[in-house]
Length: 325
Image (cartoon, rainbow, N blue to C red; front, side, top):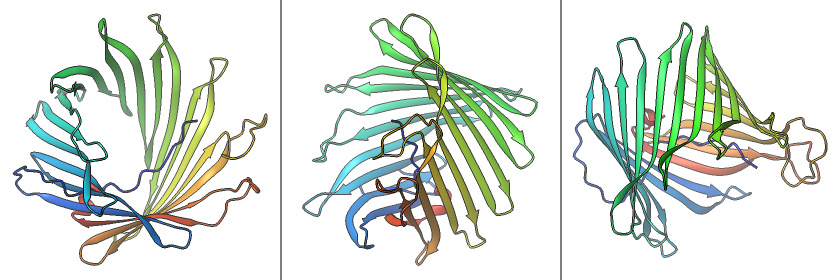
């Protein structure tokens, strides 16, 4: 079953040696740790460092090995090749490493954005994957055409993947965003190839975002293809966030699903609360930002009631963390 999981504040990454000469650099380092039921630190999470400027960025993720050293996991380097009034061209290189820190075949992405005087735009992203000999082959191409509407924006996306017959369209997405006085509403529909030249409706997502003073609310409902081919409500996520003048934030994320893990599903198709996440972000000493993630879940013995909050992780970001929010 597909689970929607809140992704913590990304102001990230760590210390793999990288050489990129950037002017007016913004740097951050983020270090995450896991916490047990008693609040004790039990394991080290990823260390993420990022250096960014107007001409590019380098983001590196590493983990501590069992011998106390540091092992690289992934490094992402972005370079802005061109940027002007007509658009932007960016090259992204993704280097991944095995558990011992040895490099694996890299991935290269080229993102080309074309802007037009009428407000419409086209973004084409092409992904190349390397083989063991270092040769790069095209793997995927995604093209998104966006057009302004009277009250928002509409977009159409085509996803093509490499096959024996060349690039083949495997997925299409339509999205409509409508602006509201204090937020927006959006509807996104994904169509997937049926293998016979046609497409079927696979997923639909409805999102509503509202803002009022220092508070914001997001509600996202996802519908997936059911056994009979019709779309059925599958999951929903509701997030309420409060931002304070000092930059601290409190967010409560409620995740609803058709089934609660550890229980037997009955005939009732109503969504049930699977998890509640509490994310607290606050300024810390020495130019740091501290984020804690706590979770409440129902137990198998009492699936109707959320248990006590348990802190799952703590992430400390140092540097220009506001720029990474």
